Length: 284
Image (cartoon, rainbow, N blue to C red; front, side, top):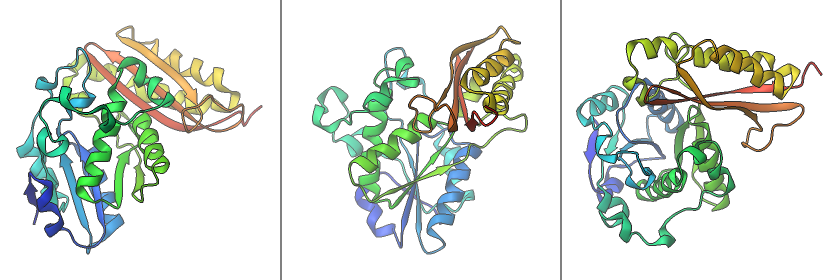
């Protein structure tokens, strides 16, 4: 039976075996459900799966309205129950940070995202990754998780979280989970609900562009990027923030070998992300 917990002090008494955590801001969908399923598979029937639902104020920047972020606890709770989650941890800011006023949060509490936090999404959303890493570290400490599930859809987040725990020598294991997609290939995201009907139809070009880049990567980085942009150019409503090929750790792309296609676009007021692994230069 799923237990709803608002205070981290209640968590230890409810845990058994190894603990896996799925950290979310709510507005759950089947992408989150897949993280829950992978978490259960990792800890087994004798372990504990925790889903955290916390709209984290430290990762909202200027122009991003914290108050308008969807809060859907009732439907989120149902998804957790359907996926055999043991604990839903839904704290407030005081339980996570010790204060509801983020201006009071000591600088020493914040986690520096480093150079990788300044590129791609870090350019579009200054300070976002600093806040994200800070809450991820807090939630891992509060839940005592041995495993943390993170989807590959938010690839830069996955890279940064993995780096943070490795650099701090934390024993928690970050488990990457492949992107869950809708039937036309669009990556599942809480943001998809903001698309109008025409925008949702247009958004199908995003995974097609990624697939074109992956298929062309054998001819090199420039060819892959050009192939992806050509697909997106078919729809003027799609505004490309970036379409790049990088190393798996988001460093410069290698001439040959494993790499990552990473893209962000805007459709109306909605910003959508996608990515996929590729192999560069095989045909060179």
